[in-house]
Length: 144
Image 1: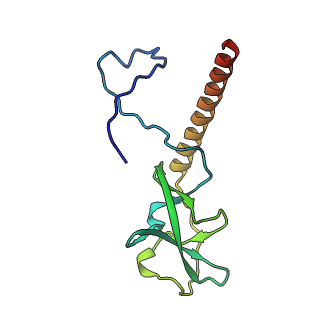
Image 2: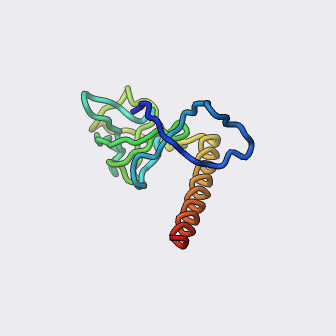
Image 3: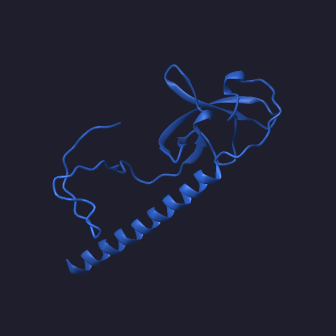
């Protein structure tokens, strides 16, 4: 969801890219951390009020699986609930298949090399930010 709110923030601006009176578009994390699985959006179907994926079972038959989605990250969608890490899902040709049919699956990469590089970079930034925030929190606790 999107919206506008007025906030006040304090952060380093050593290169003077932000000047007084300028506006910025920011993204705030709105939930606690959680484990999720990143999948290509092409793998996600919609029926009435549900988002779903088709999972390949042990007999190479397709099973309907409702999923709860999170944000989009580097062109991939976070699945918060409904999938496990070992599930194989239909990515290409979702319109040509349906639940309970037998298929001959072919494994494909879920993400491009560029997407993976972007995800690694984002993870490093998150790790760096988390570490500095934890250190900042520790130092303010020591002062108080």
